[in-house]
Image 1: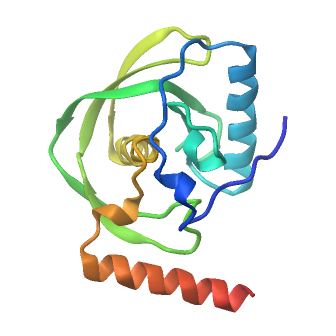
Image 2: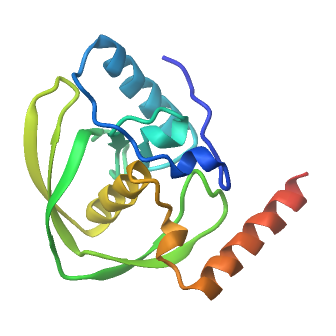
Length: 167
């Protein structure tokens, strides 16, 4: 396994719309394993292939406390959304910046697993938020795109300040 480089805002590659995965093969499973290693090391709870400069519709996540329930979604598609919730979100591509984002409270999603087998599942709470957040990445969107112009500008300023402090 290998730790991958996570693209950071404002890298324009984060705005690339990911293409469908044609078939899940051994090379794709290596990428999946590398993405998990990268996500856990970051540390994070979700990672889209777009964030590691692979523009395929693939995401991995694990919202469990013990990091023992990894989930893989190849070509994910949200079939239904219900309700709404506001949750504070962060992003490995926008380190140190957090903001409240309104998303569906529960969703039904279909995808392929790491073996290319189709499945559907219902998700709510943090899992639903995470899936929606990562699918946004596959569509070339960032959580900051859900913010008002004022809050988006504040988030950009905070990121710039954090980067100046780190330099």
